[in-house]
Structure formats: C-alpha cells, structure tokens
Amino acid sequence: MSASKEGRNIGRIMAGVLLFQLVLGLLLFFGDLGRGFSLPSRGPAAPGFDLPVSPGDQTRKYDPAEMPVTGPGPSGPMPDRLVLEELTGAWRLTGRIAEGDAERIAAQLTERLQPETAAQAPDTLFLNSPGGAVAEALQLGRVIRDAGLSTDMGARDICLSACPYLLASGVTRSADTGARIGVHQHYFGENTLLPAFTAVKDIQRGQGQVMRYLQDMGVDPMLMSHGLLTPPDQIYLLSRDELETYALLTPDEDG
View 1: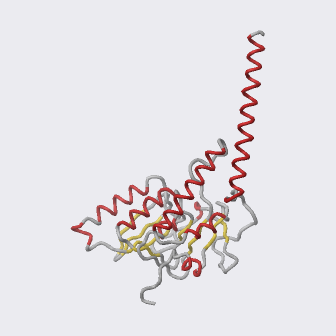
View 2 (view 1 turned 180 degrees about the vertical axis):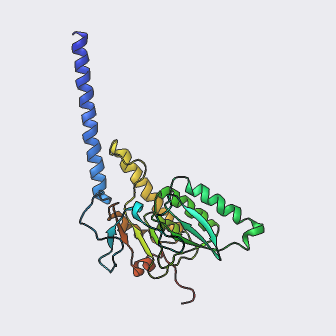
View 3 (view 1 turned 60 degrees about the vertical axis):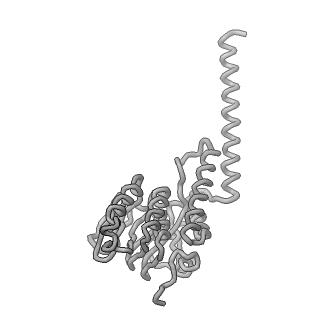
C-alpha cells in the first residue's frame, strides 16, 4: 500500500472517529438536558421588564446591559461591577456581579468589620443588581453570612439572575414592596456544545453547588425550579408569596 493511500485511509478513520464522538456527545447532551434541564431559547415573546407583574404573568424580558440604577442616588446605567458603599446606618451593594468581585468586596467588608470598628459598622446590606457571575455570588454570599449581615432591598431596587444568591446570604432577609427579585437559567463554565459531556457535567456540578448553597442559607432549593424553566434572555419575577414560601425572605420580626 502506498504512503499516500495509507494516509488517506488513516484520515478517513480519524474522521469517522470524530463523527462518532460528535454524535455520541450530542446524544448525551440532549438526553441529559431532557431529563432535567431546558435549552436556552427565546420562547414566547416576554413583555418589557418595567410592565406590572401579576401571578401567572411573571416572565419579563431580561438584558442586564439595559438595567438602569433604580434605587436611591444618581440615575444612569448599572456599574459594570459591584460597588460597595457605606451609607448612614447601612451598606449598599450596586452593579453587575463580575469576575473578581467576591474577593474584592470581601476584602472591603473584612477591613471595615475588624474588631476595633465592627461595633460602629452597619449590620444591613442593601442590594441593587441585575446579576452576573454565579460563582462570584456564591463565594461572596458565604462571606456575607459569615459576617452576620442582614440583606434588604428598597422599593425600587432589583435583584436578578445571580443576585438572589446574595439576598439569600443575609441572616435575615427583607425587601420592600415593589422590589423586583427574579431568576433564570445560568451558564456554568464555558458556553460551548463540544465536548457535550463536559458541558452537561459543568451544568450539573453548578446546579448542585447552587442547591447546596441555598440549603446552607436556609432557602428552599425548589426556588431553582422557576429559573430552570426560564431562558437566559428572560427573567421570572418571584411573587411575594413565592419569596416567603421558599424562605428567600424571612418573616418580619415586628409582624
């Protein structure tokens, strides 16, 4: 057999192996998703984010780049990463959750909560964020819980996507009527189809980490059911009853 012919045969065999791996990967990917996950898709057109919400009509369009600062302070676009401010009697955390934010914000909190200054530091953290990196939210959430802080939201604040994991971290958790808290599907690791088994593995591991985190924070992991059914370009806004049923908000001690 000539070298050229042998080379062509090896090429065909390699191409066949790659095709087999691709088909197997796709079967694993779609088969696993079909048992527990839904593919990101645009689905039915969702109303604009600012429109009123009522039970059964809770899915809205979601684009973090279009979310304005809606709480107290100057109006304008959301910061590209979390900004921690110490206001009169409270902390305030505003902006998207970006890579590196957990370590950076944790360092700021730790510096202010040293024993010699902790007694004068606020014990409540207000949130206003369209979400962002899930792993960063989980890491920072554990820091907030270890610091013994409560979480809260004003009537015009938003807490979407990965932000509810920060809300869950408070030892007590509150939100004024009018605050918008929403969940949807997340990406874990790289958003890539190949290799399919790696993508599914990342999704499963990520969802498992979120479930364990919620349980550690005293929040019902069934909260995730609404997110798993909502594509990434939409957001499911939780009703007050749902927030209390899943214990994302804690009972009002004064009630």
